[in-house]
Image (cartoon, rainbow, N blue to C red; front, side, top):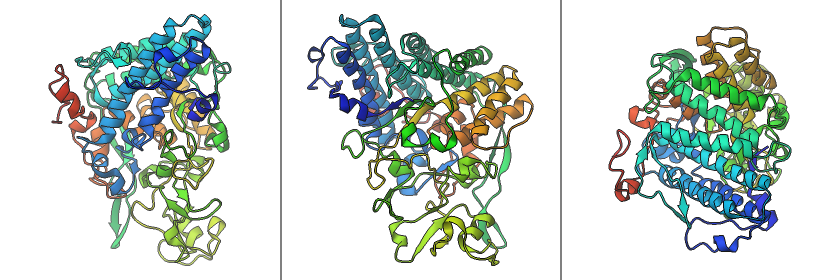
Length: 569
């Protein structure tokens, strides 16, 4: 459903307002009309693309610091190894980007409220869209940094909160919740909302996730969660191979800033908001069939409550999502990737799935070729199991001959496997684009999906002792993907199963890191890899990694912030 695609905005002929004082578009130049209100709203939406996603910092800053995500060392670099200090991903994209968006939202709300040539319904919806975006920006910030300065008002084009002190985590959430509870009654329901814009159900879904985030973080220290993980590799018979999954039981650590919150009441609120959405209070939202889920044509379907899109091949309103996750081809209809396709999931993640789950049979690439394969008439296959080795090469992993390559591999190409970042579980979620031969193709990146909210509902139901309801919600997501239906289980087991289901369903959607953090198991889960992941990326972590460091520029210029998050200079 909600794809924030600049294409829709460009087609209207609207310009968007920069928060910089020297912007060519100023409040005086925006007419008092429904089109003018839309122009203000568009200006806020556009900030997600330019400049948060535009330079490749997003989704990287939200995504790659996680246990099941890997890629080449040159891309992950210091940030991927946990050294966040001074990294532009953290300072330019997340901190400055979100606060820039908040400034635009504040100004847009102020100016829309001044307009006299709007119906009350039009005014409400425009303000609701702005409030949703501001809430989402603060949600990203509070999960990443903890206490924050609040930028409550914008005067002219200048944020008025420059120099403000940080406020407690609870106070940040109070503002997020106030924005969303206001937005949910102002926004149009799905079906009436413009395609490419958030609706009332989007706000309800985000409220469910916000409350669940607070609730999980507030759960008592010592709460147990089982994660299937372990060292990436082992050696048997002198041969390197993937290590089998180990079920490791982690005891939750207290999450700083959430100690005085009440998990039970927060989970009840999370479930209530999720069920308002799921029961149709804001329109009909449905899970797409798996084969339609990641099609370009489905970007504005009801499953996508909020997503980020772009203009194909545009120099400014672009993303690198397609390049980072899929790679772009040398020529249209060709077989050779020119570049990209770097970020993928680990073998441990792949091994979480049932054998016939669509999320690995269809959702993971099993063959691909780069331009450097052309001369040798070769290509990669995935995963390195007897089943796929036999299909791709005709030989099992012990070198026994079983016949000739079959299926997609029966094309005369010599397929092989590589124990490095070239062979990961690469997603197919972002394959379907207008032109797959360009670096900045128009893939949509989901920030909030209906499946996410359903799994939040399962989690909240489980933690409020409604295991039958939790099981029903869990199986809604599993059924869509042809997974084996889950059966009755204890509350503690269900908790771990739902967290794992989220890792499977929401892979490569910038969610895993934040689940580990809210459950207080981030450091343990990262260190359970034994130091390095499939690609040799350093995954050793300490408590300082739970929060990102504030930008040094903020420390140096804000007289009311004189220290950084613990462990950072």
